[in-house]
Each structure stands twice: as C-alpha cells, then as structure tokens.
Length: 443
View 1 (cartoon, helix red, strand yellow):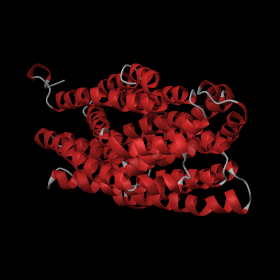
View 2 (cartoon, rainbow, N blue to C red):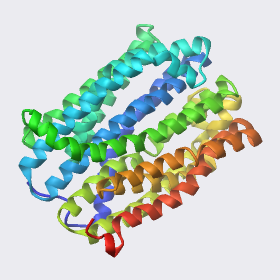
View 3 (tube, rainbow, N blue to C red):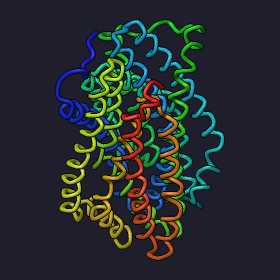
C-alpha cells in the first residue's frame, strides 16, 4: 500500500484532489439546484420557500455526516501514511459502523421532532406543511447518506479521489434524470424531488463501497473488541468535528429565521443563494476532504515540512478559485436570476450574492482550510471553537445589525461580514496547528 502524498508537488496534490472531489460534490449540489429550478417552474413561492426551510434543517443532518466522514478520513489516512494496511482496513470498518449508527439515531430524532423544528425556522401555514412532508421522505435515507459519506472519505484517505468522485457523480446523474420525471411526469411536485434524492443517496453509497471491496481490502467483520478499541480515537475526532460542523447549520438557521421577517420572496432569494453557493464554490467545500488525506499521510510519515507547505498552498489555491468564480458569477448574474424566474426582492438578493458577497467567500475558505488542518493535526476542539465562534459571535450580531439597517439585503451582508473577521482568526489558528510552539511540539 503506497502513501500517495508524501512526495511530489503539494500544490498539484491540493489542486487535483480538490478539483476531482469537487466534481462529485458539485454534482450533488447541482442536483439540489436543479430541484429548486424545477420547483420554481411550478410558479408557487411557497414551494421555493419550503425548499429553503427544508435545506436549512438538512444542513444539520448533513453536518453530522461530515463529522463522521472527517473521522474516517483522518484515521484511515494516517494508517495509510504509516503503511499499516490492516489497521487502515479495521479503522475503515469501525468508522463506517459508527457513522451508520449515528445516522439511524439522527433520522429517528429528527423524524419525531420534525414539525416543531421546521416551525423554529420561521415557516408557517402551507409552507411549513410542505417543508415537513418533503423532509419526512428525505430523512428515510439519512443512514444511507452517512454510509456513503464515510465510504467516500475512506476512498479519499487512500488517495482515490476519482472513484470517490464518480460515486457522487452517478448519484447526481440519477437524481437529475428522476427529477423531471417525478416532479412533472408523475405530478408529485416536492414529493418527487424528495424521492429522487433518496434513490440518489442509495446509488452513491453502493458505488462508494464497491471500490473499497475490490481495491482496498474491503472491510473486516465488526467485533465488539474492535469497536470498543476505536471508540476513543473516533470520538476524539468525530465528536468535536460534528459539533464543529453543526455550527454552520445553526448559524444558517438563525439567518433563515431572520430573513423570514421579510416574507417568502426574501426566503426564496436566500434559498437560491444558498443553492448557488455550494455549486459555485464546490471546489472549496471539497478542499476540506481533499486536504485531510494530504495532511494525514504526511503527518503519519513524519513530514511536517510538507504539512506546512500544504497548508500555505491551500490558501493560495483558495484565492485563485475565488477570483475566477466571483468573476463568472458577476457576469452571469442576470441569466442566473432569469433561470429561477426571480423578480423583485428575490432578484435583488441573487444579484447581491453574485456581486461583492462572492468575493468575501475567500474568508469562508480560510475557515474550511483551518478546520481540515486542525482535525487532521489532532486539534479537533480548535476547529469546534472556531466554527461556533464564527456562527454565533460572527453571525448573530452582524445579521441583526444588517437586518435593522438594510432589511433583507443587510441580513446577507451581515452574514458575510462576520465571516471576514473569523476567516482571519482561522488563518492564524490553522498556522498554529501546523507550527506548534517548541514546548508543545511533542504533544
């Protein structure tokens, strides 16, 4: 078993892993975007708003999956870097088992409290009922989502970004094909979009597991002794990582409720911006999963000089991506707004996102890099504190002041300005993780 990232050009590794990972990730997010486009074609604001509310709640469940996958990627990549093939296989088995177990618990809990949770986001009347119906279907596949996310993380830990990418690409293709058939052909509307997502998640999980079985030794038979032995290492990373990832949806939930004060048109505009963000900046979202194996393998091989170089190259890569993507969004802002039939306040918010706010996403990129670095350098708690600070102190006061001064526009502006402050803090925290003080070098 060869560790792929302990030699060669690190900027190239960062770029290739991020770009290949982002293709699959953006494919999934693009399908969510297509869902919203199709739903917008039905000409009912409450349907688009329902997608916005549902998306805010799904952020929570997805964040839990990301936390579990971070543990899978971090622990397996370190075993790969150290050349411990058997340990890598055992760790992959145990992290996947834990991921599915957490997924089941999460699905049950959300299912029971779904209506009051949607109500907390500010949804009311028919929009609230539509969001609840949509989520009741999607949550069926939550354990499958966790399985797929952990499996793709294992593939990336082995440096196999291409197969991890293709699993999500084919799942997204299926979703895109089923959407118009179920939404329009069978006249299922939101329910059609929900069932398409469920089937897509099943395909992603199957296609992610298959190459692990064929090329990387598969999985061991889970044992109580093995699961107990790995509980500590998995919890040490997955626990803080989940708490860290939950900060984002918590902040987004607050923003959604703040935006609801300006009506369904404002929530629809925010929903469009929310769906455009991961598609436009999918490379940066993928950077978290791509950087982890690079740092993990080099850390496992004792190459701290390459760990620091990877950190700096990731920041440079983020800057390049932001400039290119922001320019494209600005040029295409009118066609994008037309695609969603956005008018009035909804259109204004789309234009705002495609203008100056897109450039400010660079600072969110710094937070992504710092999180991945801390999680793979044995400092997951730093990531947790950083994320919760960004989505509480870096969100609530900025959004409240922005909304009070500039209405719905100010809510979005405040959300992004808070990211600037914590992005700079994140850059410093990440550097501290890869350059510990001499007195703590051995800790």
